[in-house]
Image 1 (cartoon, rainbow, N blue to C red):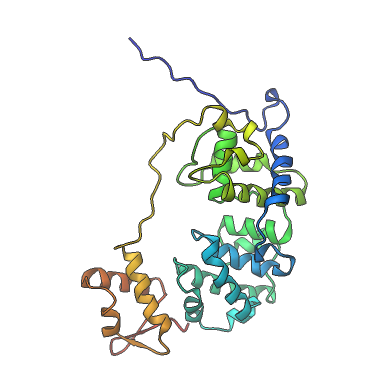
Image 2 (spheres, one colour):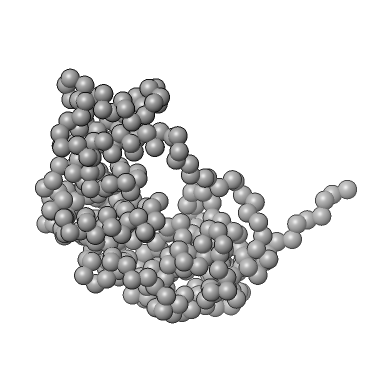
Amino acid sequence: MTAPTKPTHPAPSPTDPASGPPLGENLHSPVIDWFGENARDLPWRRPDAGAWGVMVSEFMLQQTPVSRVLPVYEQWLARWPRPADLAKEAPGEAVRAWGRLGYPRRALRLHGAAVAITERHGGDVPADHAQLLALPGIGEYTAAAVASFAYGQRHPVLDTNVRRVFARAVTGVQYPPNATTAAERKLARALLPEDEQIAARWAAASMELGALVCTAKSESCHRCPIASQCAWRLAGKPEHDGPPRRGQTYAGTDRQVRGRLLAVLREAHGPVPQSALDRVWHEPVQRARALDGLVADGLVEPLAGGLYRLPLT
C-alpha cells in the first residue's frame, strides 16, 4: 500500500504566460508604494551619501544589524569621506576603526577596494558593474547593490532579506536555501522591472520589506502589501522542511577569542607583547589558534620579540 501523495501548491511562474500577467507586475507597485511610505531614513540612502557611502554601508551591513552599523558608519565617513582618504592610511587603521562590528576581514577588504578605486579610477567608485566586480573584496552581491543603489541601474540584488521575500511570496516556502542558488538568481532576474529606475527602487523596496515586515521570525503579514498574493501564506504557511537552518553562536567560539585579541590591539598605540594578549583568554590552545588565524588573515602583524600590532601594509 503506497502512502498518499502530499499535495503541493506550486507558485505561478513569473514568465509563464498561462499564469496570467508576469507575477512581478503584480508585486512591483504595492511593494514600491509601501517603501515610499515606510522606508527608514538611513544615511546611506540620502543623496549626499554618494557611491562611496553606499559601498561602505554594504560592507558594514553584511551579517550586522543597522543599529550597530550606524555609529561606526558615521565615524568612518567623517574620517574618510572619499576612497583616497582611506587608501592613504595603513590597513590596520581600517581594522581599528571597524571597532566591534565583527567579521573584521571586511575592513581589510574595504581598504583594499579603496586603494584599487584610487589607483584605477581616480578615486571615484566606478559605475560600471564589471569594474565594480573587478575590485578586490567585491562580490556579485556588493557590485549589484552599489550599481543599483548608488547609480540606479537594473541589477538583481539578492541579500538574505530579498531571498526570504521571494521564497515566501513567489516560491511558497518559508525560508530560502542556506546558499543562493541558480534558481533564485533566475527568479530574481525574471522579477526585475524593465525600467532601470523602477528596478533600482524595487531592489531597495523588496530588501526593506524583508527587513521590516517579512522577517525571519514573527513575520507581520497583516502589514505586508503583498500578503494577498503571497504563495506561502495562501498555502497555510507550511513549516520549513529543507536542510536545518544554520544558527550563529558566539560565546566560547574562536570568533569571540579573535574579537578579544583584536580589541587589545585596537586600543594600543604601539606593538603589544604576547603577555598582554595571553590575559584575554584562559585556554592557551584556543587562544593560540585564534591568534594564528588573525595573522593568517592579515589582521595582525607579528614582530620580533613576541610583539604584535595591527597591519601597516
